Length: 127
Image (tube, rainbow, N blue to C red):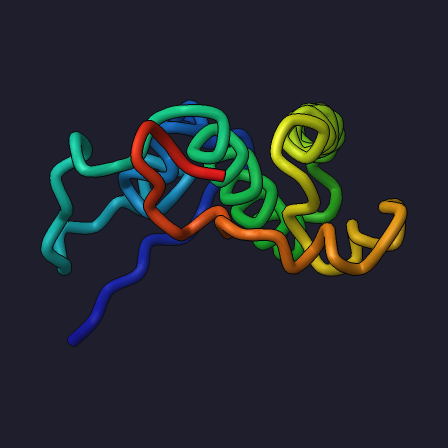
């Protein structure tokens, strides 16, 4: 019989990199029912930081769906949203659009189609 603990208001949280590695923002929900990947396999760098920020935003959003009166969590969500936006803008300034809709701010559509894509391996780094 599966067991899912009730998520408490004001629960402890992982930092964004640990949250991405563990698959949850909340240590209390980190259940040992799956095979955990070795954290050393997570790609480092700007793209990994951006992925971790986006993961934390998703986790906080799900938490806020069930705890809409938690003003501390909502303020944390706002802070992470600002961090994610700044990180995404910095990434796109250096490497081009990350999302298709980001191409709307470019001079031509070709900037969206330019290789390599973020998930393609390139000698010496990623896009």
